[in-house]
Image: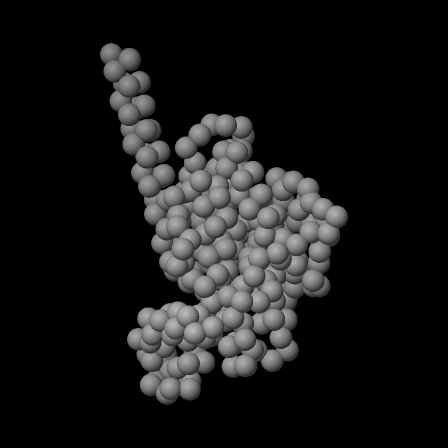
Length: 259
């Protein structure tokens, strides 16, 4: 207990400059805001393109979508590409084109009063939930182009990412377990096997999914959306640069061939 408290103190101390800037120096307000920053990272807003990654041609390429909703990160895929038992979600949301998955604290997400007591309780290890968001348009249309990064994976990478999502869930006889309707239309909570804490947030979880796909991201110590977003953006930018260079070389080769 003492070591966990010390670790939490370390996290909040690192947030202190940001906390004070927003809270105007008030100790109680600063503490509440610091905890809130950790938790709202895994609270979500309702729905309203970029580069690709992947280094192999194994199977048909699959696009996954990394979506930033303020402090929260979701990972999504085309609904037609999810396998059982995740494929049963298509029947629950007629017309769905994309399914987004995000992790959060069950106690906090389902609390009627999300005041300081609920915030503090959520920092300690507790039951997690997966929030599934069904998108009938495109992720970019729902959340804005600047909030979505597309990463192109090969079939093996996509399967590994999906297995990581599935491995996060609590299944009964191989079936998904619903924990009720989500916070907005077109969403549902699924019971998770993983536990949420201040050291394993929605962003940590999303990083683990991308890491399982073999993408060059790290998850340890990744607690906030910005930490993961910078890694994903770098992957997208590096991939775009490689593709551009490959295109230039191909053009030069074709030009020499004509000569």
